[in-house]
Amino acid sequence: MKDTQNDMEDTQNDMEDTQNDIFTAFIVAVLQQTEPLPAPVQLEFNKLDENYTINDILKLNQLHPPLLAAYQKNRVWLNNYSNEHSLGLDVLPDSEFEKENTTNPEISNAASDISDLTNLPKIIEKIDTKVKPRGLRQFLGKIFQAGDSVQASRDTILSNML
Image (spheres, rainbow, N blue to C red):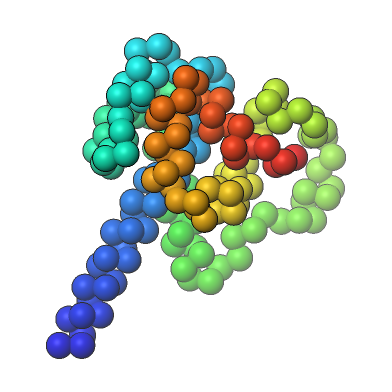
C-alpha cells in the first residue's frame, strides 16, 4: 500500500515538473521574441483567463512560428538540463572560458540588450528567483493580459539581470 502511495506521489511530482517546464519554456520563448507579438496573436493571449490549460499554451505557440521555434528549443534545453541536474552533473558554464572570452562586451540597458536572451541558464535562474516564488501560473496570467506580452515578460525577468 505504501509503495502505491509513493508511486502516486512520484507521478504527481512528475506531472508538476512537466507543467512547470512547459510554463517556463513558454515564458522564456515569449521573452526571447525580438518584436511585439502580431496583433492577432496578442489578441489570443488576451482572451485567456486564469483557467488556462497547458493545451492553451501549446495552441498559442502554433499561432506564431518564431514563438513555436523558441518554445521547442527551450523545452529541449530544459529537458536536457533537468536530466543532467538530476544526475548531479555540473551544468554550470565553464567560468574559465567566460573569463578568457572578452570579445562580447556587455550592454547595460536591459531593454535594448537581447544578446542575453539566449543565455538560458541565466534566464532560468531569474525565473526561479523572481517568478517561481510568486507562481508561474500567476505570472503567465499577467503576460496573457498585458497589452504587449513580450515587454511584460522582459520587464519582470530582465530587470537587474545585467
